[in-house]
Amino acid sequence: MFKEKTIVYTSGTFDMFHYNHLRMINYARALADLLIVGVSTDELVSSYKAAPIIPFNERLQIIEALKTPDIVIPQHTLDHTEIVKKLNIDAFVVGDDWFGKYDYLKDLNVQVFYFPYGTGVSSTNLKKTIHDSYEDTLHSQRRSKPNTVKGLAGE
Image (cartoon, rainbow, N blue to C red):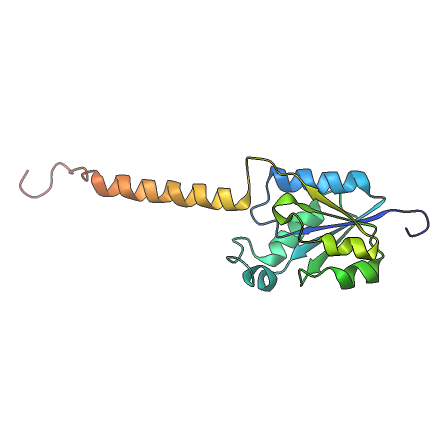
């Protein structure tokens, strides 16, 4: 703690910002006197999964526009050891899709909370829904006959 304040860090890609992102950040806020939110850079995200749809600077601005974070910073690595030490982090909140991945922070006296997203919306699901809908639309358009225009040659 810093001057009796609990410093909480949460981080994520926050691509296609949605309700579960907001719920996790609000949960972290409820634990914190000072909330720091890290936004993963495009380079970091691309190192372990598909590149984000929304560019880093736009995702950063979306998180900065929220009233809940006190500080918003870029996140360049998935190893939070350095940031925990430099910023005196007391607790870390991350989605439960990362369950167990950050248990090493407990050795640095950081409480780790794996926020349960549960079922429902995720950026991955949103991307799949949009893609599938687009594919269905293309498929439907290929099957339908084009409308004829009256008054053209031969009519």
